[in-house]
Image (cartoon, rainbow, N blue to C red):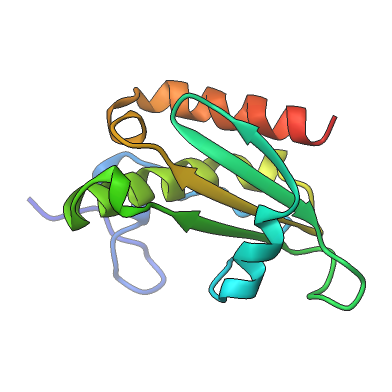
Length: 141
């Protein structure tokens, strides 16, 4: 049995084999925070504590990267566990951010998600999604 093919290039379509549609493209680009001063600036701004993570958020100034950009950072300290546990927690935080921020985030803002010991890795994924949605709504109230 041969897989379904795209007539243009001969390669199978993304959803034809797996049944999964490709992710939606956001109108607002999301970029990852990488340098320490950005994390420190977010730590001095608004914050909302949720059961599985802490959300820090700040509106960028006019001298920083362009406004139509959402930036997000992820942190998991050694209190979360060993490297495997920290990476798992950050992977889950990245997944919920990728799903929620393009629609619920505000362009021109920086967000930092900080993992909590045991909770981030064990909380049901649907609850993580709800937590981030609620936290963003309260931050931007």
